Image (cartoon, rainbow, N blue to C red; front, side, top):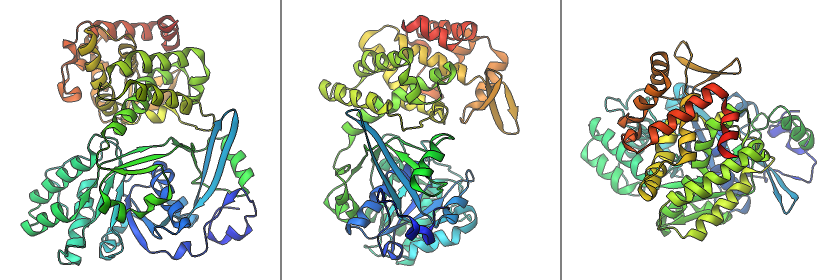
Length: 500
């Protein structure tokens, strides 16, 4: 049987936490741009948990804001989904299964934009959450927010806020708390700047802009939880244990953290923060952001090209192999930690790093390296390049592991086939999709350049990196040497000769 509201009474397992009576009648208090698993496994997890504790009592309207993906599973399952928390602690499995009723509706922006705008008329709805990937928060100066719907996420958000302003006549109590979870520094500040500039460009009036800037709270935030979905093996096993089929089944580690920049007023509005100590609201989130960005996300990005090209499917499978485990550990402790801000205590860095390595070893997380390569170029720019620059600042010499990682990134981005608007690389005779805004650039470069020239061309692309990386002594040559080794001997042999 498939998970939906009508079968809840048939689920007899004492190991599954089911929605409480009345959960389906709670008012809608949150608008969420995004329907992905990270939102299901963290913000919506906290909201569902708070509803069970009676400290929030509100549900989420989720908006599918892009044309990618399918929401039919949400509708077939009455927006219900199962969160399976799994972790090994002291060699023992710890687990919890929860059927979440946090989401009340899922709206498709492209087809149901009037319904999205109608949510702005609900006074109880005071919170907006987003996760539109790291490239979602950007300005399109010529965007008309009166389109049905606007193209970009900031455009959609602005249109919603303008509808809200109009619905309540600029009432001082009608402002929203807006929490982006996109992994970019100062995401709340940056989103507010883009939305405000877009409001000016759309000539929405001084009164609205004043309301936008003074009555709405754009809170920077940081999310930290590994969330995955089952594979061909784990899916049937979990569904057998649960006793039903769930096409939205979401697997998470037990660990969770959502840090939001805010004051006591924000805490009062985000009352679901009372339900879990992993939800932290503080005036300054910078230390949390730096630890997570550099010690969880940067190792993922530095390693994903190497791991994928070497034949490792998941993060956990790479941690099981002595060769790749050694690379990841050395990467973190020998190059990343020494390149981080000195404002953070060394012991805090090392403690967080040790915890990250244990999280990477979690056998229940099907965290695929290929998925981590999504928007690879922007991740390298935001997560890795600052560490490379800091390494040079501190040592003035080539970082061996960083340079190998950059070479693997270049080879992964070797687009060999164009089909429609999509670009593909090839590994062991099988094509893989390059889901990256720079795929066309790499397709062009790999068609025309030899490896040495290509390395220089890419490294000097200041629009890509913010700096001319050819100015780093020895970096171009080191990356070229590693790239030639990958081409001539393969990734795994290059890694063997490099690490061992």
